[in-house]
Length: 229
Image 1 (cartoon, rainbow, N blue to C red):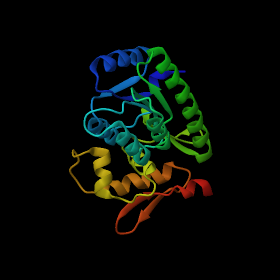
Image 2: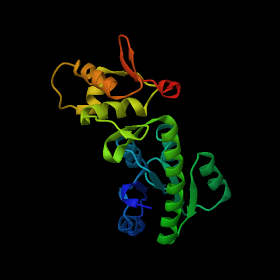
Image 3: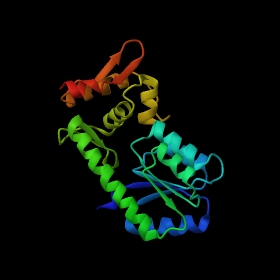
């Protein structure tokens, strides 16, 4: 399995454990982002996407369970391993009730942790591939590319970022101002109708009509249009 494409969020407040396990993950090829507190982990999750998170429970700020709860609500596609010294049954059941994929008790062999990560990622990657095949339209975030039925779409970076924003939250209606921020951050100076131009181009390049205009507000991704195709 090619681990170099997988991004890992590692929440651990104990410096030695964090340093050793991060080194093992990095040597194996994972792209690891470290967090020392629950609040820092949530902040990172708000700004980035990860393939898997390894979470300690007893950390400063909000605990690992609150991070797990946040992930369940906002980034449910990210796999989660709870890595903790808490070994009582009640705590383990709570973790699995919050949809943790695995629960590992410290101390742990770095090799065993890596094998558990590999197993989970192989399973979730297979599931993701099956869902992508069914959906027709899917994104490869690490490559900033969009595909429809296996064919790469000829999108500019701005068009891809616009599609990505809409695609990841299909139930949300975005204003033009919100879409400008998602593409250009705060660097853009000009008319917000630039979004209309990008949407027009996207509609020409995507074989299915999946970007819906919400009159008086902005745009929304129409997930049902994919299944109707």
